[in-house]
Length: 282
Image (cartoon, rainbow, N blue to C red):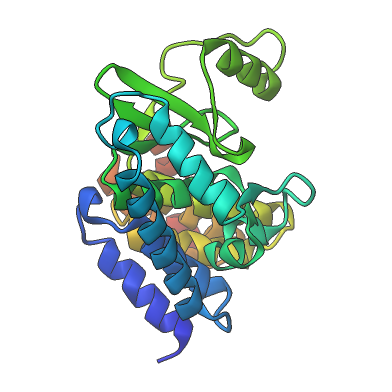
């Protein structure tokens, strides 16, 4: 069995688990192995263990943070561990480098995309026993540290800076334009599976922009190993298979998407395409 086969088998096994049981960093590492099969993933796993150990030690050394008396202390502790001690930072110079979405390479280079750094923050927070989740902010992954009085929103790409309403308003304007304003749903929480899919989506989109449909399809198929009931991914896989003239495979994927999500505008469009493809086979 090749390293890629081993990684895909591990991702498929994770796909059968409930979200709460996912080890987010371990799954991200397996996704990374698919694209970097020669990399030393065991050393990367050891580094993840070191990060977890330091997060536990730092939490124990800060009673105000560990007891959640001060909502901002946990942010300070995790930022110190990840950004100061381990030296992780957002890659502002080569942002679109695919290495920034590959956890193996992020661990090696100590640089990455917001969502890749978010995986490390979630890994460290989980080790410390602290509640945290991804935030599905448009165009820029954020993280929230949970607190009985609310949540602390953190820009992990910016070194762990806390974002209150004025900073969030400035960020949405930077992403969507000067007329954009804060609105309900901007801070929607993401479960672990959604964070991992957003990480891989960066790779898929970069491949599509490079007209590497084959590579984008491979990435999508790996995402489906983790999220086999994700209708939109089945649609995307079917459309890419259609572009590659794999009509039988496209029909299988599109039919699967309709089983999972039979109603709605997207489903109606897919039904029309399915009918067209079936006519081509007759």
